Image 1 (spheres, protein in one colour):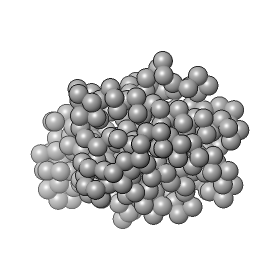
Image 2 (cartoon, helix red, strand yellow):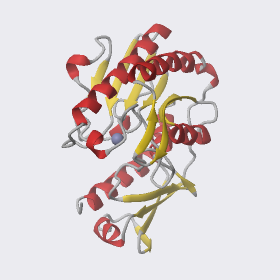
Image 3 (cartoon, rainbow, N blue to C red):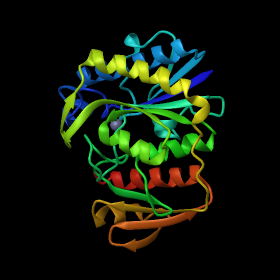
Image 4 (cartoon, rainbow, N blue to C red):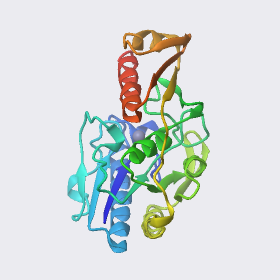
Amino acid sequence: MKVFISADIEGVAGVVHREHTARDGREHDRARVLMTEEVNSCIEGALSWGATEVVVNDSHGTMRNLIPEAMHPEAEYITGSPKMLAMMEGISPEFDAAIFLGYHSRMGNHGILNHTFHGGVIRNIRINNQDMGEIALNAGIAGVFGVPVVLVTGCQYAAKEALDFIPEIETAVVKHTINRQTAKNLSPQKARYLIKEKTIASLSCLPKIQSVSLQGPFLVEITYLHPGLADAAEILPTVERVNSTTHRFETDDFITAFRYIRSLIAIAGGLN
Ligand SMILES: [Zn+2]
C-alpha cells in the first residue's frame, strides 16, 4: 500500500505569519521544524496502518522546506522546484491514498494565511462555476490519477473547505483561526499525536472514500487582485479577457487546465 503526502506549511500548528512562511522570515527555520515533525507523525501513522511506501512532496514556496536530516527514515521525499504538478508532483496511479498536510483555505475564505497558490496574484479561481482553492484543485489532480484524498490537516476553515468538496474526508484541526494572522494552536506534541491518529483513522476508512472525478470540458475563470496582473498574463494566447481583472479559457483536460492556471500565475507573478 502506497501513501502520498503533499505537505504545505500554513496549516501547521504554530504557523500564523509571513515570518514563519517566507524564506527570509526570522521564524522560518522554526516553522520548518514544526512542519517536518508534523509530516513525520503522518508518516508514522501511515506506516503503522500498513503502508509499504510513503512519498512526501514538499509543497510550500521554495518547495525546499522539509529538513532532510530530521525526516522519518522510512519515507522518501520530493524537494525543489520547478515541478510540473507543483504541490502534487510525484502523484501516480500507484498510490492508494493521498493526504494534504498543513493546508489552508482558499483566498477570500476565512482561515489562517488564506490564499490560492500566490497571495500576491490570485483573488479567485473558478472552474465550471465552482470556486476552487488549493484543496479542491489538488484533489482534482489526485482524482485524474484515481487517487482519493483521505485526510486534510490545518485550521477549522481548511477542514470545512475540504469537507464541502469531499464530504467523507477525514480532517485534523491542529489550530483554530481567530483571524487571517492569528490562531489558537494545539501544542506541537498534541498536533503531532492528532495527525498520527487521524492518519490511521482516515486510511482505515479508505474503501469508503472515492477519488474526485471532475468532468470536462472545464471553463476556467481566473480573477487577479488587480488589472495590471491580468494585463501581464494576457500574453498567454489561450485566454480571453472577461473584465478588468478576469481571464477565461476552456479545455477538456484537467491537467491542461492546471498547467494553464500555473502559467498565468507565473507570468502575472513576475510583476511582484
Ligand atoms: Zn504554502
